[in-house]
Length: 277
Image (tube, rainbow, N blue to C red; front, top):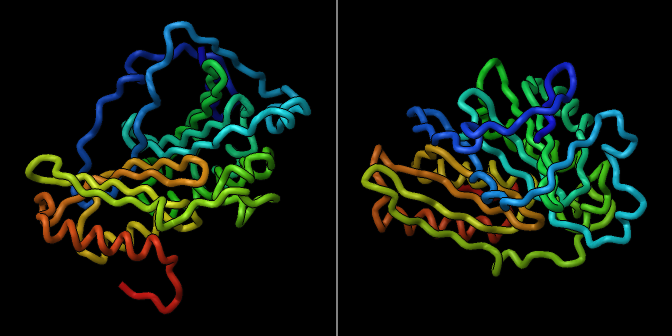
């Protein structure tokens, strides 16, 4: 059972088998596609709970939660599961409710929130928003980064305890993370062949504001095309996967090494006004 939200509120809906196994779409040439990997298969025995939007605690943590271990927040942008909409998925243990203020903040960005779902399995609540802009998926990298930061900022506002688990807590939260990620150690870049026409670029690095735009700029400045991507923010770390190509073909070993070196250098050294690629 899931909790579905539309322009008129939330309603209980049964999970669809087709939605759980949506087929991947082949991106159209010239458009940047982002998607996140689907969540791991659920256990056979699962506890599903739905919380009313009229509940007093849907936007904040209860007093008993303060004594519990703070879970790791996860924000994902999924461009693959829904043919027409961009899906933004957020989880923070079992502490999230309907997130109506997050929905309003997304609408304030000029986005149309077509549907929202809230499902709880075991001790993890997952909230998903299906959003569109101008009647289609959100494809602009700048807007995607604004969406990501908007969701994280609302999480910090209504669940301030998440500040110590998010890299953004140092910039926007009330308490910076006690343990910071060493950029030199955390940054990993790998390029692998994915057939004759494209390669797969894996990036793992310390999260920070503007990271997505920074990565896209570095890739674009090497004249490499981004066909699609999986964007995953897990606490202090960003884990992204990009499908890339050069003139309609996979990257050769020389170009792969150039891209890896550029990404490693600039991701380990936050960009300044004097930097140029």
